[in-house]
Image (tube, rainbow, N blue to C red; front, side):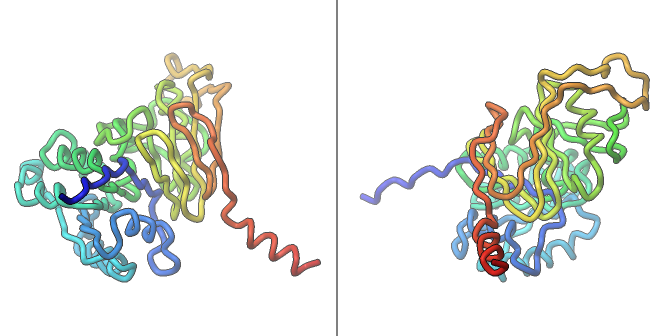
Length: 286
């Protein structure tokens, strides 16, 4: 009798957008590895994009270059399409699912509460890696920022939350974080809902979340974690458009190599990725 297969841990790879596809492709290489490499069965979801054919071609090229077989494509155009049995079967058989960037509202219209959304939850439960970049990152949480002004200063009612997939609960995820100056809008959302933890992810950067609790940072940028559980704010009373008062928020800035516990909201470990390079550079200058 063949030994039972070891159950894989639920894993999310949540990417801040604009990940490197032509150089080292660190983040996408990690996705292919988690999905099984040469034995991977990847499903690509380009639904959020306005250029779905181009997105499909681009990710097919990079995944195959990194050693995976060509992905299958699931691309519902309406909420009714999200009940397609063949598309559901593809996700049920996948070892990795990748959701592209674009408009997260397209994803929220077609996945949460549909058979395809249920299939994504089943895939996550059995250990298939679920990855998303940009809009595909925002949809991972139970509540997502669907629109909002950018800038450093948090302002009252300048952003909007919509329902996400709920693969990662208790958080709000924002992407293109430093590049599009989204600190203010994430802070305004977390200040108004202090039971939620804000996660802002830079471009070409990802968090690999294991067991819905602990994440490790990969890529060239950083991840910001915003904790307003003990902060004071005038969010209940501020007038529309006014700068928010937020005092006592805790901010964590986490580069590649950092491991963070979302349940305890604290750093677990940090392994500096460039330590060897720094030592070599110091030796060369000596």
